[in-house]
Length: 226
Picture 1 (cartoon, rainbow, N blue to C red):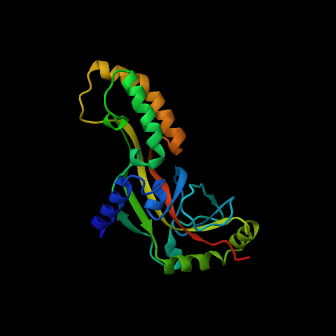
Picture 2: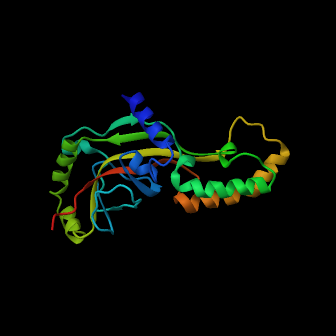
Picture 3: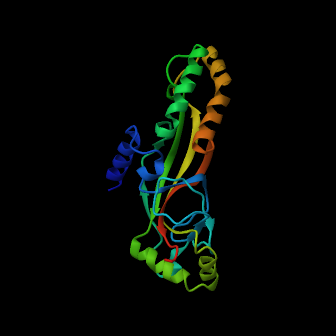
């Protein structure tokens, strides 16, 4: 099961043009910037019109107390699935930027592409998830909390989402390992590296390092019907 999941995700992310960002390719919504402290089962809100679409990246604000331990609701904690590494250089939003960076490499006398010199990826990726039935049980339990009910009322016209699953990983940006760059190449990479970093940051709204970050989540829309 884990092997099949990893293979499917790897194919989805390696196929050019299959998605504009990594969220929908995972059946999830991208969290920008990635952050810690987003828990499966908990409720969050976004200052936006409620939507079930996954294409638009977003950030989350806690609606009521987060619950990392779901056994208090009488259900098991999230199951854990290993997911293949995600090569961020394959993100379709970067394609135009990578072309421009390749031109800069050539101007410095360096051949090839940015991917020949750098790695930018999410690694040690894990999916934490609960079933729809368990999510419903947790939601019903949260509704017993007056603070949660008041929070839902305050944000009744905005996007309220319960997190059914999270994708957690380590963000890595580094020069390619195992390649012996000579002093001349190393010096030239030192000239272009700040530009590479700023281009990636501007395009994907990501940093360059971080461990245990939630970068995508599977939402269940919980905004009350009007």
